[in-house]
Amino acid sequence: MLKRSRVAMFLVCASVAGAGVALPAAATAASSVTVTAGKPSEYKFSLSSSSVKAGTVTFKVTNKGKIPHDFSIGGKTTPLLKSGKSASITVTLKKGSAAYLCKVPGHAAAGMKGTLKVT
Ligand SMILES: [Cu+2]
Image (cartoon, rainbow, N blue to C red; front, side, top):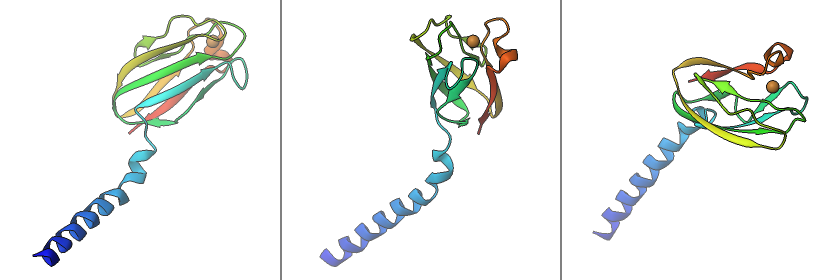
């Protein structure tokens, strides 16, 4: 009896380990992304992940630049953020790609834009 339960334990462990093997591919896609505006240069965004999972995604945006910026993706835009301010937006993204940009006139053209991979 004792021996049998040990075998069962082993099987449970083995199946958990098996599931773990499939994780790395999914681990690269985030459902929450930290966005830094204005750094490393004023007209750039820096994202904590270059790909997200399709579905609900939250973007936590902080303006580390000197002038006001916002962040727009998936049909939603943060309020205009002054230097040092943060805001979060939650959007639903479909598989494919999602373009993001700063809507302050001239900023996207200066480099405040990019594309996020949605898997
Ligand atoms: Cu901007």
